Length: 408
Image 1: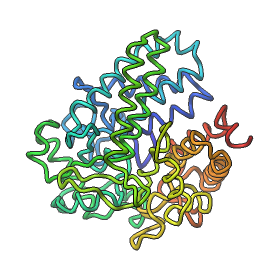
Image 2: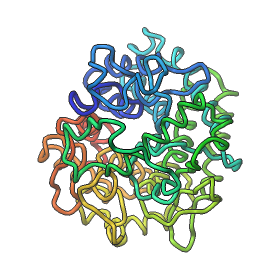
Image 3: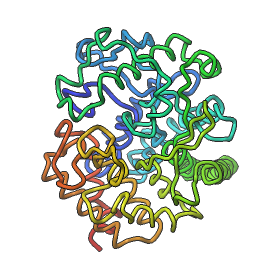
């Protein structure tokens, strides 16, 4: 559970981030975290974004299992960070992993997961994955979704009961109007049987190619190549590397704006590239051999994100008129994004800046009681405390190779 009160179930990409930390102190728990998540994989290969805890009262979280009508899971997805987490977890304890046949068990499931994304979610026909709901990005309330969401008629706030406001300040959370749009979209996807083929016909037009999701998929394909090598599957490893290169090239060709020096989300329904500088546009830094990395690093260090001069990595453009340092994904710094950007900085040789960012993230975690997210100017914690991935990724920053980049 990311949080015992606010998020009392198992979330998809949260589990991957939590495994990155657990592998250092309890690798058997990290393996169990991922195996449990993939036990809920659908027949079509998708990994649902929530696996519901049967011991949690249904009214503790909305939308719960009764809303989704999908048994013990939701019907949406989250970013594909799992292959990288599986490979890192294996490497932390190869003997224990081998004894449990960890790689052999999860490799075919990961292949099916990526196949679902590339075959069923290429709604734009350009070779990139589309999300069909803001929750699928993991960055629920991002300003990048404002334009496509504007086409969605919100459900009336009186038609559902928000449980998030029982555990968080309303000023920190999405507005009732935005939440009503989330509920409407989720209900539409549910009511079309979670059919991606039917979605463009029945939806209110929310289909978006997100740079963060697609960069993480390319990175996950590279991780699958390493797993395939470890399983003595050289042909499969080569195919995964080719897939990663293809996705990365399409990402640059499709979502990169050379004049802005940034990756933007594309509204597939309107066939328009967005103009919101959100932290998702920084995530491609995790990819090696990224031809636009120097320009993207310059944007990260510039006034929009002020990397190294503010706390963590802001989730939205600091210079934007609608920047909000406290509201969910509309300005605050999140630890998982900071951790991903830290990885990207190390990968592209920005070791000094990575060391500064890593030390700042560790300090923020301790100062805020492992807050869900923080004000990028003051470091004030927001959201819930004792948050799962904040604690786990702090462990990772303080352990092994990450520690060497942090303190060397």
